[in-house]
Image 1: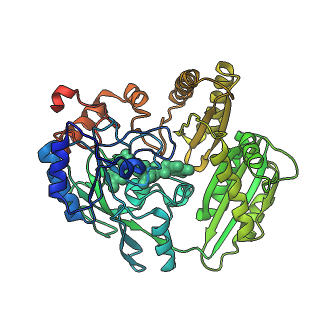
Image 2: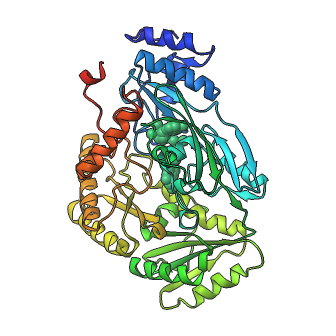
Image 3: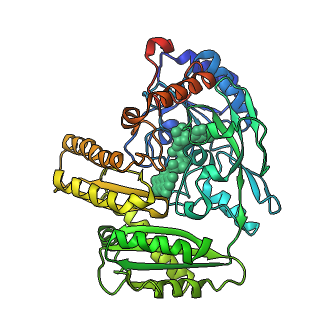
Length: 482
Ligand SMILES: Cc1cc2nc3c(=O)[nH]c(=O)nc-3n(C[C@H](O)[C@H](O)[C@H](O)COP(=O)(O)OP(=O)(O)OC[C@H]3O[C@@H](n4cnc5c(N)ncnc54)[C@H](O)[C@@H]3O)c2cc1C
């Protein structure tokens, strides 16, 4: 197949000339797998795909893009859920894939730190940490596909935030190639460093808009020798939150996950796979998946069992996994629910946060508002409630037309976000803003925050060639010189 003739053919020629052979892909067949994200909702053929091998090659690439005014978008594993990593204008952006910069540069069990290139798949980085009897605690369903650079650029969360924090809390240092090709070397494993501004924080969660992250120094932790998992059934979200408050006190800092699933989610999981059975003796309105972990001679199982036995006023039924494989089966319910919730079609994903004390109130208010406005739609509710983070997703009724679905998503999102506003929450707990949440974000952000954000963007990317139109609105075409 031939390369498409493109008005920016000259730009492509400049890139091909600046980079080693094989770095720039332009053929339809070659760029196809960089054109669609995991959700399938976002697709655009990029102008070209660049795949540098090293920070020097990345710097040369960005110098060329800067000189030629070529818009780019960095890309990790394409699992981001806000449409930010695929080209925004068909044929208008060069995708920069980090996939060839995928090495673990170093691991130290004394510094409890690892230095990882941005294109390393999260699961591989975790595997290499485990080989040193340590853990890299970032853990979530997409870990087999997402890449470290994407995790840092989205400030990813996941199941273990409760104990170890968001990705931001785990980053000790970064190496970043700036929009004009300069390299900012902030790659260090120091635990304490108060010299001036903490510049790495600007790039964490910046969704590719301020620089290309090429490597990260990350905290790792001693590997727990014991992990205990329990699933309990409760009467209400209020009871789940009361249980959480007690668990924080009685299980000390050993809790690593506290996941809420409403009954509908359990039904989705058990209907999706024949080998998954209803996990407790009867259905309950609310379930919580609890995990605790420890190293050393703590009687972790005894602690968890004693805690649950003492919570008989809240816990209606429950099971503590007898083995690791039983624990994995309990987690499978959570994973299958996420995978199967859309019934193979599109659904509205939300990823919101409220103060933990408001969580039960938020869920009740949001579900009531959705039921009133869209009784025909299915609301699926689950979340990392120890972090006040809820995913309240909306599945359209079967057979609904594409335009109606779009209108439903838009209106249902506003219903949920209105409730979030009333509870003093955030419309994005983990996934970021990208393009999908931009309108809602801009409508809610205060003027000073937006002004500061604009100043930072202009300072780091004066020509606006980096991921233009994500988080902040795109600068008008005339100002960009398109
Ligand atoms: C099944 C599933 C479960 C998920 N669960 C969670 C969860 O529990 N918690 C959570 O936080 N997220 C979750 N996500 C969302 C997603 O996996 C994370 O946002 C992840 O961190 C994205 O990584 P990625 O490599 O796929 O990035 P991509 O999707 O490729 O990119 C995401 C953003 O980062 C930018 N970017 C990528 N690499 C770089 C780089 N090197 N330098 C600068 N910018 C870059 C992109 O331009 C884009 O803006 C889930 C996704 C799926 C599909």
